[in-house]
Image 1 (cartoon, helix red, strand yellow):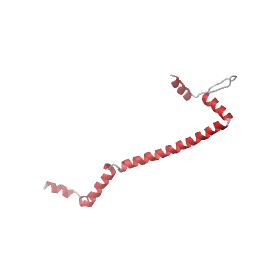
Image 2: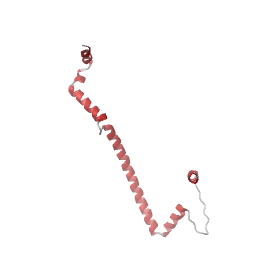
Image 3: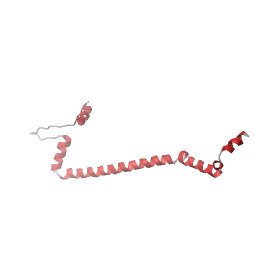
Image 4: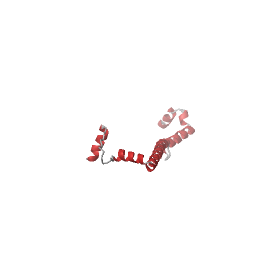
Length: 112
């Protein structure tokens, strides 16, 4: 008798077998399935991030190809690159390096 009183308190729409089936199906799809909606949204977000990373790296590769072509074809650019990146100088020149505080900290960490 107690069991039937509990069931009688539940509204009729919630006791409907179709409604219960739909609720169980939604819980299954949203939470329990291996391809549930939560993991799908997480995977879609990861895919978007990877696509933007891919775009960034493709642009970076193209930029580096252009720089490499410039270095291979023009000696003036090659000399400029060597002076800026590797701090090369001619024997009769003095070289002064001006660094920002951030670069200075990075350089001192590398030495230690």
